[in-house]
Image (cartoon, rainbow over all chains, first blue to last red):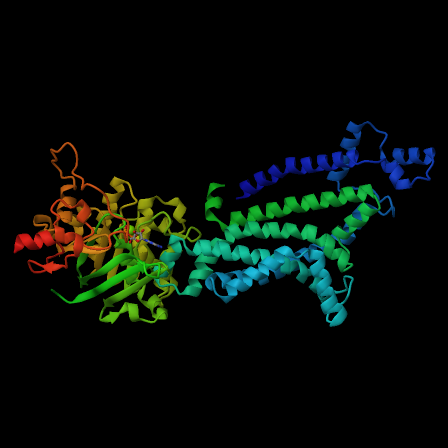
Length: 312
Length: 324
Ligand SMILES: Nc1ncnc2c1ncn2[C@@H]1O[C@H](COP(=O)(O)OP(=O)(O)O)[C@@H](O)[C@H]1O
Ligand SMILES: [Mg+2]
C-alpha cells in the first residue's frame, strides 16, 4: 500500500512537469506583447523596456523556462501586474473560499443525489424513477449561472432567506452565505450523481452475488445498502471525481453571480485585466486541483476495492 | 414413500405477458422427501434453474410463477414476501451454478459466511467464528484460519464453490438446493466438489435437490431422479430403476451418451438435434422432433406422466403403448 502510494506520487511528477510546461508555452504564445498590454498604449519605449527587464522577458527562452519552473516549485508566482500584490497572497485569500464551496457543494450533491438514485432504482419505472429522470434532464440542461440567478432572485431577493452576496464572517454566517451557491452546484451535481447511482445500482442489483445475499436470507434494505450499494460505489466514485472537478468550471459562474471571493472569480478578473502572472497562477491552481482529485480518487479505490489493493 | 419435505405441484413459470407468454416451466410436479437426495437432470435451457430459484422465490422479477410449492406444509408461493428471508438460508440453503460471480467481491469470505449465520441466529461473535471455521473445514477448505480474511478473488472456482457450500449449510438447512455446483469447474475439480457434496450429505440430515446435466453426477449421489426437458418432466424414478430400466427415449438417449469406464465405442453417442428454445413447441411432446420412436399422437397431445412401477413416472406415448 505505502509502496503503491509512493509510486503513484512519483507518477505525478511528469504530469506536474507537463502542466507547468504547457502553462509556460501558453503564456508565451498568447497574442500581444505582455508589456504593451500591461502598461497600455500610452507607455513609452523606456517604460516597456523596463517592464520587460523586470519580468525577465528579455532573457533567453530557455533561461526563462528554468526560472519559471524554479519559481513554480517554490510556489513563488510573482506579483500581480494590476495591484502589485504578491500572487501567493491573492491565492491564500481566495483559494480557501473555492475549497469551501467545493466541499459544501459536493457533500450536498452526494446527500441529495445518492439517496434519490437509490430510491429511483428500487422503485424502477414508478413515480420516483420518473421524477429522477425529469430532475436529471433539467439538471443537465440548465446552465449554472442561470440556476444561480434564479435561486438568488427567489431565495435572497424575494424571500430574503439568504444573504445576497459575499462570504460572511465566522462559521455560521459563512454557512448561511455559502448555502445558496453550494445548493446551485449541488443541484447540478445531484442530477448527474442521482442518475449515475440509479444506473450503477440497477446494474449491480442484477449480479449473482446480490442473489446470493438474498438466498442467505438478507432483507431488501440490507441487500441494497450492505451488498449492492457498496459495489455500485466503485463505478460511482469515478462519477464523484468528475463531479468534484466540475466544481472548477462551476465556481467561475457561481463566484461571479453570488459575488464571492474565490479562484474562479480571481481568474476571470485577471483575464479581463490581462494580468498574466495571475492567470498563469490561476490556471496552475486548477491543474493541480485536477491532479489532486485524481490522486484522491485513486486512493479511495485502493481503500475500497480489495481486488486493486491486492494487485498493488 | 416417506413424508414429503418439499412438494411441488403444477409449477408453471412464464416470462412476458399478453397472449404469447414464454413458458419455461410447464406444469411440473415432484416431491423431495425428508433426508432424500433428488436430482433434476436435463440439458441446458430445460428450466432446471428456474425451478430451483422458484423454491426460494428468487426468479427474475419478470417471471410469473403459478402452482404450489409446499415446504413443510406451507405453500411458499402464498407466503407474504417479507416472510421469505426467514426461510432463505435458514430452512433452505442454495448453491449456485456460477461460483466466480456468486460471492461479494468486497467482503471477506469469513464475513460472508458469518453473515449467513448472523442473519438467522443470535449468537456471540466468537461462537460464530468457531462455526465458520467448522463449516470451512467441513467443505474441505485447507488452512481455514488463514482464509477468513481473504477475498473471493484470491480463490479458484472450486474453492469459491466450497465457500458457497459453507454459506448454504451455515444454519443447517432442512433442504439444500445445489444448482449445477460442478458445471463451471474443471473436470478434476468437479470430482473434488462432488466429493464435498457427498460429504455434506453424509454429515447433515438435510434433503438435497441437486441439479445437473450430468447423469454421472446423479449416479454417484442421488436416490431419485427427475428428468426435465423443455420445461416439462419426462421421467421421474428412483435412481436404481432409472439406470437399469429407463423408459423414456430421452432418458435412454442421455444414458447412452454417458461415458463408461471401459468404453469400446470410438465416439460417444449423442442424441441428434438440440433442445428447442423455450416456448417454440406449441403442442404435443417437446422431445418429438428428436425422438426415434415418435408416433402421430405425439404431435397433437403432450403425454401425461403415468406411473409404471411404484415411484416410476414416465410421460411418453410410445412407452405407454409398449406397456399396454
Ligand atoms: N430473464 C429471462 N427472460 C426470459 N427467458 C428467460 C429468462 N431467464 C431464463 N429464461 C429462459 O428460461 C429457460 C429455462 O432457463 P433455465 O431454468 O436457466 O434452464 P437450465 O437451468 O435448465 O439450463 C431458458 O430457455 C431461458 O432462455
Ligand atoms: Mg441452469
